[in-house]
Length: 183
Image (cartoon, rainbow, N blue to C red; front, side):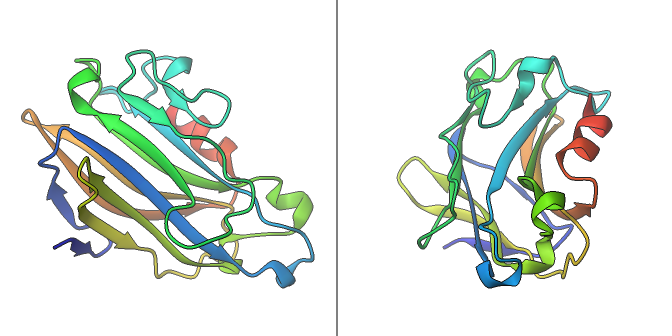
């Protein structure tokens, strides 16, 4: 049975290979424009900075240099139930100096489309093992009324053990705010 996490809660990830599933629903009538939410992953070292530009995994760079993180592709609409985007992780392939994996969702062209995460509902991040068993789930319950980017969670290594932390932190400057923070 999956563990439902609260913001700030941490749990050990017992599976070396897993899928990060990300999902959301949008209020399409709120702005008259379709929403396009994008999942991005930042692979960081001890200094909390990207190991290299290639360690920023997103719809235009689907695979990290080691193959330890693979984005399965951009869902332009978010239609349907379940995961809207997925990222496959194989911790055994991660670089030895990788200590932190940040999972961020942004709204594409949010400023132009006048969109924010206050218009997004039922947002979640979950960890699913290779057999399809859901291990962890974190549902965002905050009202991000001005934010256009949200860090859903992080996977980090401490004392040789990988853990997941439910983060739920928003930024109003979109993806650029996170790039500025982690580059």
